[in-house]
Length: 170
Image (tube, rainbow, N blue to C red; front, side, top):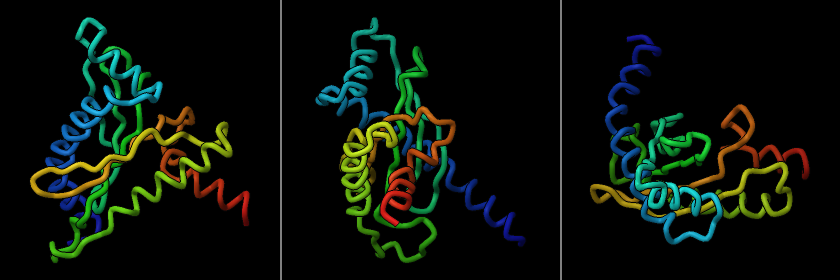
């Protein structure tokens, strides 16, 4: 089997899991945004609960498959009201040893670094909104929620802090 065929086969097997976890991301954001003092999450909460109770969150899979999935989470009645969400796993789907764990602190550390840099360079960095522990089917995960980048590419959302670090400190 060619590499491309193998990669396509792996992605096809992951698709149902991506959708299942998209539901988890939506449920978590809906539940947690009511407790948040962040303006964006407050707006989402208002839109879901007070917008004639007709606002509904949706999620589009952006990327992922081995140790995390990335989503654009948005309001169906106002698609511009959206956030970037990254769901990280404690085990990799590519690893046959399901007892091997990947420390979820990596996602918390990403949140911490992004928060610091967004305070130093607010015009050049998206703001992290939250980092929550989640669990599904006995599997622990971390959900990192960021402000949606106004730039064309979500690359900035995921790696903007690295670019800032490289150009400012190298």
